[in-house]
Picture (spheres, rainbow, N blue to C red):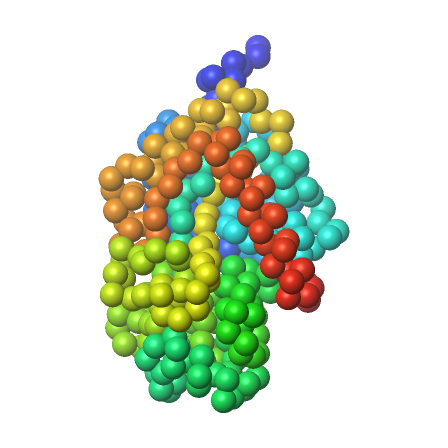
Length: 304
């Protein structure tokens, strides 16, 4: 007997998360999943499949049955991969159906306390005196935490050495230990250490100040006009998922993000709830792919 698309999903939903447990992407998924279970009426289980800058998880999802029972959490890195890796085993747009952009995630510029700078202008001057001798951590080549610094380097004329990690968590660990000196992690990953004084927060990367850290200026305010980078997380389904299922999932996920308990939990760590509808998220994905394609071309970046 056939099942009407409006009645789906009708069993456990697998949310594939392309990040290791404990990182900011995993945090987003775990905060949201209980409310999503309630909204959709089916259990939502998290399947962590980290590695390869999200490509493993994306390929798994692209090949899954398009019935609403396999979903993919993505970050802005998904749209970077479209240009960075020319031989992807999937098309970053055509092999997926957009459901919703969950949150915006401004990054925070944090330095090890051994760096004497207390402002962005001071840090730029300090770095220019030590061209190439300051190491910065990222969660991997082509990740937002990498591209944000590359754009910062272009706009300021400073040179720093990239140290990519398999996720931001180990990068933060080395930043705390002084093996690297600066990073642009998400607010979720960096703000707690800045608040505790273990790292020094200099600015946020978004166009507007973050409600989670209103005393921190934006990078643009602090001396780099025109600089604005904001990460984000969203959810995709496999291509060919019926429109009725897409609409149902999109509304359910958006409602979950906008619920007071979830949105307040996100806001504490600096994430800005969005909950866009499928067509809006599709437009956003296309725009992000175009933007990051230009950035990677301008800096001549290639995948390692």
